[in-house]
Figure 1: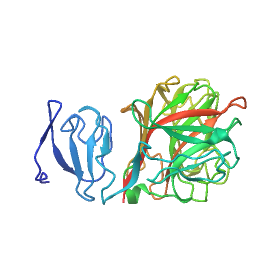
Figure 2 (figure 1 turned 30 degrees about the vertical axis):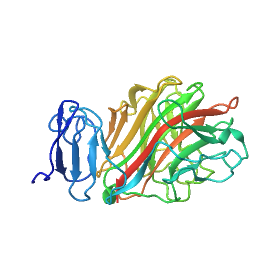
Figure 3 (figure 1 turned 120 degrees about the horizontal axis):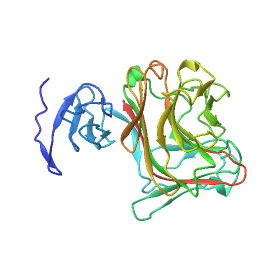
Length: 326
């Protein structure tokens, strides 16, 4: 395959190259260009769609992100909330909170409650979305894209990615954080969406509400687990199981969610075969083969779930992104 006719560029002393690849790239130690050509800052271009990606990671473990989301072959968004209007706590329906189309939904937002307000501020370090949920067990606040049906199929849209940078405010011991792809196509992305899965001691239980827990793959930290701050990688391909146990080595990724006021970046990637790759702070922390059905349409979701009745919760979100091939 011929190289693109573009010059190389110098980035932090390393030679950044632009190379053609076939399909959207997967990140990590087995990802596109790992240990070969993917120097930090390297650019690659999918020859089928024309979409260009930059390596935010290392040569050994590249971390591929689109250079811009205004590319014809790309669908999705990446926002740092600059200019976003947020959402008043008095709002009682799911709605967009960002001009790029991020949607806010979840169980409990139908109540006129200041705890569910979403506000944008501008501290040092850039825009910050403060994201809240009510003080009822398993009430959740969620981020995703518009619409109630699935959006992308791995077999059709190729590699699917959802990526978030966030921190817990006050504590992390009264909540769950979930970043996932969900295959429910029956209106679950509404204000009444319950947690798509919950944890208790050593067991993760997939939602039994409708089909919300039938096709899931992603990362969860749930303070009700015995390993309260541990990140777990979960999957429920084609509603194969009602639960998943933390004793499963593929589920326990031996990575922890940081204490309150410390930011972490989480990412879930699904490739064209339905394999899942999970990342924390650009490092690959879990791989699950054949995690999702490639012909089922899925949508990205982030949830913060309250695990207590004694306090409302907030987290801070710096950035939220998700994408696939158009």
